[in-house]
Image (cartoon, helix red, strand yellow):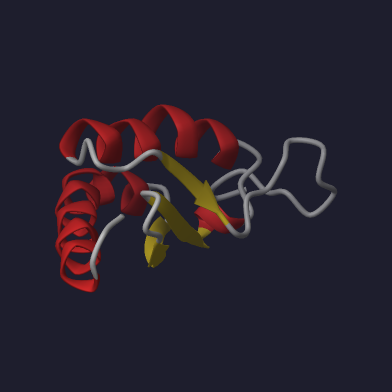
Length: 97
């Protein structure tokens, strides 16, 4: 079980990992915000900007964001987004569409 201090430490490490990939997200008009880190190592994110409405957000989250976080912060068990868009979502928009 993680303490409040270790949760804060893990959240700081997650932010550092995200800062490494943020330029790529921002290049497509997107970003991510850390909402929570649980005692079990689950990181909850909010996808911002174009990332929140892009049909590729699931792939970006798994192949890019989650991979970068887990490599940098082994204590993280999983990463999820509260507002991920699926390719069949009628409101989904490709970046700069």
